Length: 457
Image 1 (cartoon, rainbow, N blue to C red):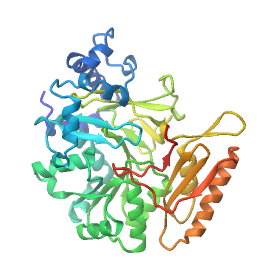
Image 2 (cartoon, one colour):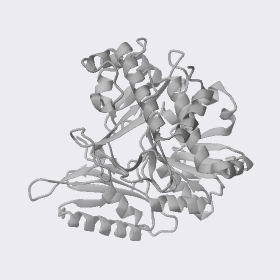
Image 3 (cartoon, rainbow, N blue to C red):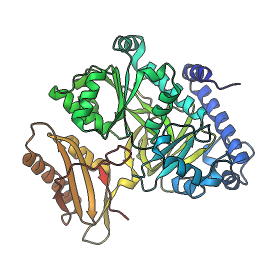
Image 4 (cartoon, one colour):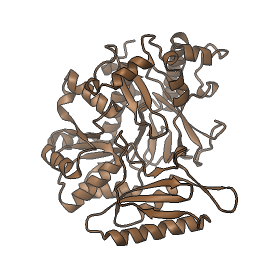
């Protein structure tokens, strides 16, 4: 059966209506199909899966992969033998090729390397079409007929806040759409998160989007501009992505814009991995993706507990299969049905395991603090729009902040310093120095603001 865009759109809608058993059957068949494809055409997977059963529809039977392993075996990983690391790297070195078809067939996307290693990924049309179909399903469920009608009245325009200075998946996908035309391209416009804030505000005021999608940290900065009256747009839906958010953040955004706010948790390796619900949980799109919260030994983490890391399988991309891929985030699987009514697995995300800060205690041994310890502190702190904490030495933290308009800088700093000092003291880390930075938070080349930057190895 041909997996055209129209067929995929019908299929993702049908999957939810037919219930969990049918979704599980589809997922198992798609996993078995992808494993067979990988074994047949990828030398890396042929070697890795030697000795496995002929049909594999249970992901726990598969060995774990990660970015380092796949990048180290790049030329053997791809199922299209024309793809090589050197060809892809040369392609991504040319900004004039952003969104163009690599080898005439594929979209190329890079990751900025904030997790420690830059990724070069090749995405086929099947993956891009599945991502579009699944996202359309989420959009329809969020808005309903009345919301869709309101969006049409507002012009139906999408504002996508992305990094526009590289082959990052958001901008590469947008560029592909703009270059190849079609009806959707006329309703979508990309805005650079690297623009000065005043310029970005002016552009959005002129564009008047019905939908705003982009990095959570940038949307929080725009929320302050909307509250101050400098930004005055009336979107129907705002979709923060790329960074975790608190309930107070999403409530503030909803109030400032008078819009629905739905978050998403995804990655370049699986852009359609999950979408948020009204209860603040991320629901895995489990007809096309597998998500496994696991411990350090890669055994399942019980529901209700945060995992050491999470393994994902993208069941759509055949050209570079991601199977039991270690994404590096700590997630918790909801132990009971979500009140929103969706039956798909619901998760919360704590952040990257690689963003945990480790300090010498001064008493022997180390003390580790998760990003959540710091984000929950700053979430409660008035006057702070954006924060970034960098560990510049084993016992030194440098704090960068963007304060709210009208907030007194010295007062905000005293509150931040006192809060951090108490947090550290509570964890017997009186030996850690907290420094005030004059510079604002640093933005990675991919557009994200990492709130926690551990000491470089």
